Amino acid sequence: MRQSFAIALLLILTACIDPISFETGSEPRRLVVDGFISNISYLEQSKKAAPPQRFYVALRWTSVVNNVLDEVITDAKVTLLTSEGESYAYLWNPEAKKYLIGDADFSAKVGVTYKVRIETSDGKIYESDEDGIHPAPAIEKVDVEYKTILKSINVDSQPQLVEQRGVQVSVPLKEHSAETFHFRWKIVPSWIFETSMLGEGNPNKRCYATNLYEYQAIKVWEDKTGGYNRDLFFLETDDNEQIKHGYSVFITQYSLSPEGYRFWDQLATQQQSGGGIFDPPPFELVTNIRNVADAEEKVSGYFFVAHESSYRWMLFPEDLPYQLTFSDPCEPIPGVPFIPPAGCSNCLDYRGAHTDITNQKPEWWNEF
Image (cartoon, rainbow, N blue to C red):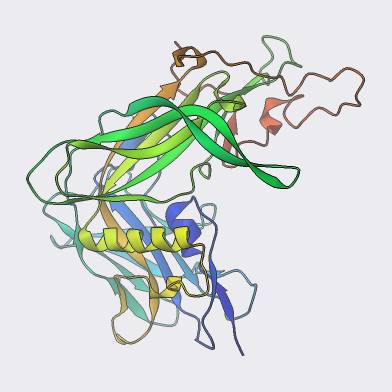
């Protein structure tokens, strides 16, 4: 009997891509682990221009039934162990569906190695390999290039090439002759949605939207020399209502170990391949998690220690070398029956942000 397992790990790890399903024959269920710590504590994150995130470990059992979601593990004992003999307990958080480190001031230190220890309710003990911080130059700025690309669209069910103006955003990598750096970047955009159906002063006229899933492609890179720019994303500007009142992107750069980079690089390859029948299955991705008593047991996932830095980039229409005209989605079309889109009567109902919407201006939003 063939069974299809959906690795929730792929959604958990990246928060940017859909789970991938694949055939594994009659394999028993297996543990999936996703864990992460960095040099930036929760308290330090709270001072940055982005919502803070606690360090976590997420645990699941893969489903042994086709088309059934993986089982979240809520009753394990999870501990972070350091090479200096310290330990930090993770506490189960039902809202996040993850185990979180309770110490808000904890951060990973250079020269110290870390591993996570997991004890399941049936007494099995799993540990990750030890990992430490691999310092790299912090991301300090991005470069932008205004350009036009050719984009394929469907017109009457036929592909047609059209010109699309936009902004190519890249990160400059400093020239160096030291060790090879292994990078991953996470890109989270935010923008303003404003409804014309409500008057000035109405608290639900303007909202600030964030979407973790806007940029789904995994961005990894092995940098041996520096001295060049690495493209991060292309922001289309024509017919893009998101930039009407300002557009902001929070870029997090992670410097990984060579082994951690290998995992992310394999995951990126799997994503790009589309999961075809001849592609390597996600279960064969490198992992650093082991059953202490049974090295032959198959486990999926990875526990990361990363050197983290970040940068927020903002774009306003007046920054562009050309003018844009924006339509008003909340304005009725004469002679046509009109049902206002979600958000027009209350910006909090806007559906363009899949992860966060608020009518409170974030402290980091700098309107020029």
